[in-house]
Length: 515
Image (cartoon, rainbow, N blue to C red; front, side, top):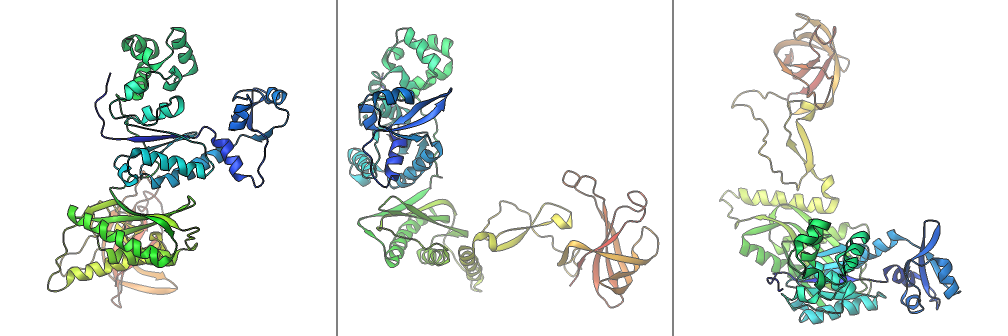
């Protein structure tokens, strides 16, 4: 049964000796003893992982350490470290970004790469697979790789098969000889299928699916369809998939900062040309510097507006490089530099007016971007209105490069009218002392603030603002007054709590001062 030709191709990588490879790589002095990794299971130390030499000597995962020593008295024994293995797998995945920007962790010992459209860089799928395997071998890692049009197909063949590359549309045929264990079912379900006389994927596929769905549920039939390449569920990449990327590979690694900047400028020009064809501008730019030894350094630039100017982009990357507390170490050099654009927004060609207003806006945005890159976005802030009547919550500080998806605007007074709220606000409000009022629940006539007496000649209000009970349970309402003293100074005061109803003697506070 042949499947419809999918549009994607995947490379599955299985590291069968990952725990042992990690320990052997980390050992300063090599050892000739077979390595076994153990963990206590039900009171007995059992082998959880072994090295190839231990396997050739007859040891197997699941054996007790005592039985293993009976066969081989001299062993190199280490404790299982799942966290260390996961860290190594993540580092391998980071380096594998050089083969594809879409890499998925297949824990605990595998990776999946979406290599769609990437094989031509290496001269075809066979060369890509060969280059991948050679790089892993040089890093001291045992690996088995398979390329197929289905991620589950490639994964199963890497662990249980012998095929290296499955032509598109032949997934179902390629997996027929695999054991039932390739489905990844629970042990009880696998044994039940085996007792029925079905030993391979092909034997199971030849039976009516409804029979097994009734016994094992739809999950088993879905797994069968996935391994045959008939179903392609979405996969979650370890990093966000960029909408556009360009890269340069070097036969000889480069290490000079000037060379890196020159390559970034060329990549910026290429990326900006593609953005121009889309009539878009990048909002996030990520430069990935791949070292020859597998380490990867990433530089991320976020802009406050869509941008597609290569010179400006290079200037921002220079700012980021200068601001790094830990300068980039090229090691043995960078053999790949990639510029990715995860986010972009529409951007038409700029047409400044005769008054130069558009140019000024761009200059301010450019300055904001440069400051954000040098000092970090969290240290360069601007204020935006918040959806709240409470003066203490009516404003929010956000990174200046943040582009809000909100239509909230600052409330502006009518022409020739005084503002309703002052520009100078106190947070928290400052207490004041009222010495005279016309009526108990009215505005003050005389008050003391900062050890000085003020005589009120004009007052507007009250404007009552009720508390946001879902955020401040039990808080009192506020009665606000705009007042003016004998010297013409204007203040914004409030009484915390309704007189006699919420509190017998509500306190007064200074919220702000009008300019």
